Image (cartoon, rainbow, N blue to C red; front, side):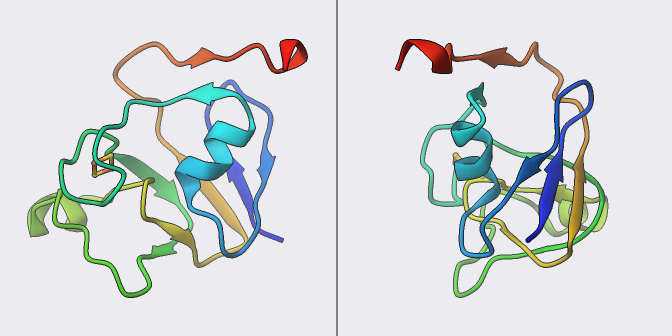
Amino acid sequence: MPWLQLPDHPAIEMQPDETLLQALHRAGIIWREACLNGVCGVCACQLKSGSVHYATRKPHGLTSQEQQQGQILPCIALPASEQLLLGKPSYPVQHRDLNGL
Ligand code: FES
């Protein structure tokens, strides 16, 4: 199973068919998002290592230059390698209290 790592957070084991954003949500991480469809670019972040794919979807929320610089859209990105390392977002990452669910 692929693993997703965010700086200063425990690694998250992913399902091969779940998006990075779904894995972040499951771990209780609150990530900036809006369209959830790869269009707005709000969820964009840097992929420091590993690779992703978008299946039949297209990352319209990123320019080709942003993609070449390693930016990805977690809302539609699926794991394409066993280890994925995301860059730290430019905003403070918050967590939901999963114990209260
Ligand atoms: S939430 Fe809009 S592109 Fe990801």
